[in-house]
Amino acid sequence: MKTHWQILVVDDEEVMCESLAAWLREDGYVVDTAPSGRDAVEKARLRDYAIYFVDLKMPGGMDGIETMMQIRHLHPEASIIIITAYATVDTAITAMKEGAQEYIVKPCNPEEISLLVNRIIKVKNLQRENTILRKKLTRQYSVHDVVSKNPRMLEIMALCGEIASLRSTVLIQGESGTGKELVARAIHNAGDRASKPFVAVSCAALAESLLESEFFGHEKGSFTGASQQKRGKFEMADTGTIFLDEIGDISPKLQVDLLRVLQDRSFYRVGGSVEVKVDVRVVAATHVNLQQAVAEGKFRDDLYYRLNVIEIRIPPLRERREDIPLLAHHFVERLSHELGKDVSDVGEGALRLLMDHNWPGNVRELENAVERAMVTCRGPVLTERDFAFLAQTAAPATGWAVPAGMTIEDMEKVLITATIQRTQGNIKEAASVLGIDRSTLYEKIKKYEIPR
Amino acid sequence: MKYLYVAATEEVEREALAAVTGRVAAEFDYPVRGLELGSVEFAFNAERAQYSSIAVLDMLLRQCPPDAGKLLAVTERDLYIPVLTFVFGQAQLGGRVAVVSFARLRQEFYGLAANREIFLERAYKEALHETGHLFGLVHCAEGGCAMSLSTTVRQIDLKDDAFCAACARAVRRHPEGMEA
Image (tube, rainbow over all chains, first blue to last red; front, side, top):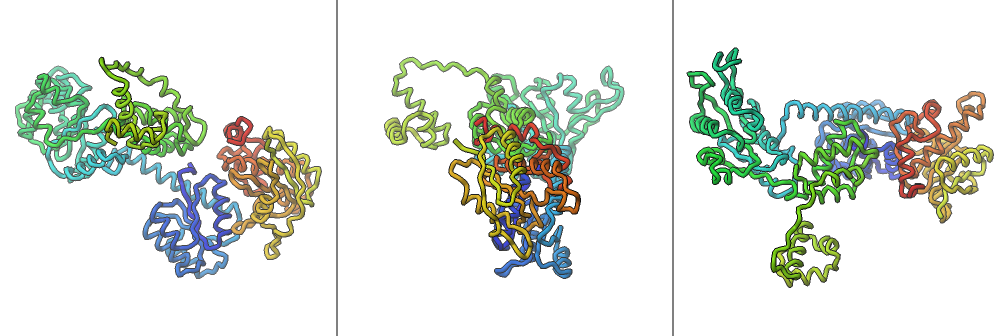
């Protein structure tokens, strides 16, 4: 797992800097160099390196100790190795006191540097694995864990932060695999209820009678098999958040029960006569269009309005294709640790293929595709070949019926508009896809008055 | 047509050079040519009583024939880079030139009786290792692979004189590899 770690070598002597950097690159690390303390601090501002090799004596008013102190101010966990040709007990003590992880005298034995770097990276790998596993275990996702640069997603994340501490009900709508539960957890974790329970219930998974008991609990003997009293999910979520996934799938009877809970924040256990009061924030999610379900009479309009106090619509992945490379790299980084495979990147050809795929299963499908590619890949970079299965599993393209009376010019306008949308307004790319030169494309855009 | 050049400085024993050249040619399946280099005294650092491998690589780049895809030089001189006490060799990662020093591969360097077999085994392995770097390979986690990191002769002795399957495949698929 070397490829994810970056090292910064700081030395005013170029030959010293470059020779150590080259030696470390042969070991598979990504290495940057800086000719002065100031340059090093600037680079550390932009990126947190796993290891900093810092020369003790550097001109320009910022020596190795000062550089180390400023880097540690930016990254308190930074592993800094001070290197010097002029070792004294005093400088060694000062370096270690100020937080240097190691102090080495150059020239040093290759074995010494190799062991030192391996030891630090081993600890970093363990720390990183620990963080990932902890996060996975507690599923403590925050708004910062949502990987996106799409303006709509960024707006959603900002909204999550704003509404996190309110008690208002939230309705999250989006196709399967778009990350509705991730958003629900992000809302919960960003608010005052973060330390309280987050209870998720999938309404699609259970039959009506079981779901009623699951929601509200039951009293002992209330039905066959109810051998003891059981608390429902609403009680378990008291003072916290309940996440009702696939809310569009619940029966008309449960819709009534749920409406009462939303109005009164109280309910009766199945077979019970004592009213149970709860303080629960409800976040519901659905992949079906609830407004349409209301219009068709399949979902109660009063419940819909109760749920839809704050509405969040998560766009499908095909409408935020700019996130595909970000997400692919994110999954590669995370899964390389989980699968123990030294895969560090996604090649350009593979990215093009991922960008062209339609992703009916959204982010979850992309995650699964990256995992499958990583399991079978043989190199450090995922290639087009590793994603060959996407072509086999892709749904057959729906036949496009040419509308009656369509002219060639109409068709050309549709084609150019769709291509420009697909390339997100990149004219050079659109012209290349269409197989015409840019000036011709500009003429046609003008002719058809196509918005860009 | 590009060649893999195996070059030698003036003091290198020709028999050892021939053995290494043959092994490299077989492993890389690449047309190989020889090249005679002069002395590397210009790279001598009197303070360290060693030769700067950076200066040697600079010289190799200047002397690299136009038809050289890659050039591996061998020398008997003990090499160093400024930050380390010595190097067994050095290469431009994914570049054109590399150098291997035989000095520390001989048993005599450690005060032991000469052993030609051990020396040649080590020389093969280091020649493969540095040439592997020229084809973009970084150190391999497989302990037995010729591309695994060796900072002592003991580590060189423990690895094989061949690449592991993944490194061999990476060399073949390299833009300048034989499959390309």
